[in-house]
Each structure stands twice: as structure tokens, then as C-alpha cells.
Amino acid sequence: QVQLVESGGGWVQAGGSLRLSCIASGSTFSMYAMGWFRQAPGKEREFVASITIAWSGGSTYHADSLKGRFTISRDNAKNTLYLQMSSLKPEDTAVYYCAASTGGRYYLPTSYYYWGQGTQVTVSS
Image (cartoon, rainbow, N blue to C red; front, side, top):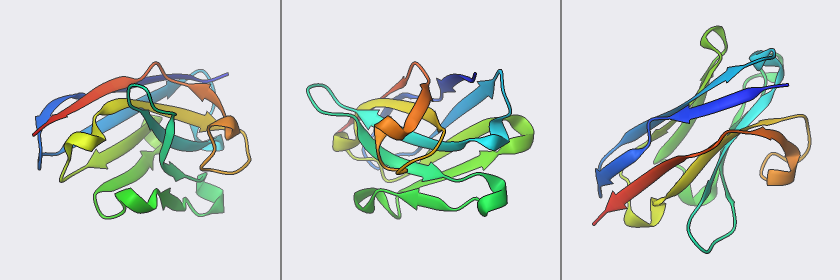
């Protein structure tokens, strides 16, 4: 079992940057593929980025619309997942969730079994 706790959200002006963190506990973090999703009010949960486990290369995947602005990374020694967000836009406003996957298509929420409680990101124009 994995417990996930996100942090780093907040309020930022358009064009600014934030780095989200997700600390994992309770199980071997390095064994899980990890992902970031976001959900804006009235919208479905949306894939942001994912990263595979180390032995499979630590490959990263980002939503096409976010490439170049968002970067996912992980530090297995610190049991921490990161999401670096830059050039933020008001449409990036959402609750951001980290999640741990036990397999499946990396862009589907149903592939992730463990979820954090989310951290709010608000981008003002």
C-alpha cells in the first residue's frame, strides 16, 4: 500500500512557475510508475504526465498540450515525485493529483490505484 501526499500548490500569476511535490510512504516507491493528473471544476480528471519505474528506463510522458511547459521527474532516494510547471496559464487552474500505478495505459486514471488528496493550483490572469 502507498500513501501519497502532494504539496507545492498555490496561487500564481500567469507566466509564473510552480513545482509540485508528492511524497510517498508505506511501500517501495521505486516499484511504481507514477503520474500527475488534474481536475478543474466541472471537468473530468485529465492526464498531465507520467514516469515509469527506474528499471524500465524512467521514461516520461507528458500530455501533448503541456509539453515544453510541464516536466515530471522522480527521486527514488527521497520517495518523491515532482512536477515542474512553467509559463502557467489561467487554464492550468485545477486540483493536481499524484498517483501510483500498478500497470496499464499510463494516461488513464483507471491505471492508477493509489491517489493523493490533491493540491490546488490557481493561476490568475
